[in-house]
Image (cartoon, rainbow, N blue to C red; front, top):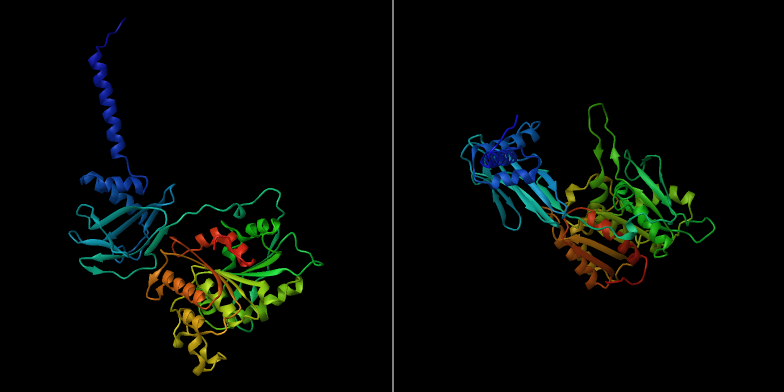
Length: 444
């Protein structure tokens, strides 16, 4: 039996299949923020808004209250280093919801039918940052702990990547350290790196201390890889690195949370932290390894409060540290005179307390210090750094650089467009180390 089908029937069927595929692709549930963005930009219709609502409700199903704006935004990174950000807020039908951010930016939220829920998705380029607050009918909600995000992506230098044929040093996690003098009751993790080129019969090794140490000897931008490559290439001297985490006071009972001692240690602008290193922790390292006793051979490095802590250690104890690397340093107004923990036990007389008030004061102190202190300083920060009640991080790093220049210090200030993170700092760590151990900087 033979069948015959006319050409018009075949064409009609093909068009129907194409139309069905198109409808299916349009009505498919969104899989990511980019899909949601397209739905929100399309002409408003009930089906699209229902899909957007379902998308956000699924991801926030564990949130008990979406009306206060304290929940975290959604992020989807893109291959170009930027990404999409998604906001979702609960109100009443007909409310006016707007997202306000620094630099006079604002994004009206889109009401999803009569559900009382509002959403917004925006795409941001690499090296962009947003510190936002929600506005409900003209009243701005307080900024929450999750109300900031940003995108920054860097290419690692060859020295930050494991290279074939380069001898690897040894990183050892030490037993948890319990302080008994400067920070009694605190416990901290720490690691010691010894390069392959270290010899007990050779010259004493240089010393590098990393605050927030666990973040530097693990993960991307691992400082031990950088040290392996630079020492092997003889771009920096043989150096032993000590990676030290902030102290934690263990929970006193079951169900209680441990107390982080980081701000007490890093934001308190006295000699205490440097003295803690000198008297309590570094003697354990000196017992095992030959380390130079010269303070110009001692470097301390950190980011954020760990960066300002590094400068504090050198400023007050130049007999211990004379080299500083600070990434996104928190040279801001953290501590007032009544905000210092255990002030009664501090050895600094009250009438002498002013010069040690807060890291915000360092630019003025640097300018007034004569003669300048024997400190070499590397600073890094991005113009998308924090800007809040404690100060403007980037401007305060600029103030530090200006003061160091005015007073004739040996320094290098590297700027960029990054936010408040150690990513840019880790990316330039090879350059920072080469410069800090040599008399001149390439490209300074």
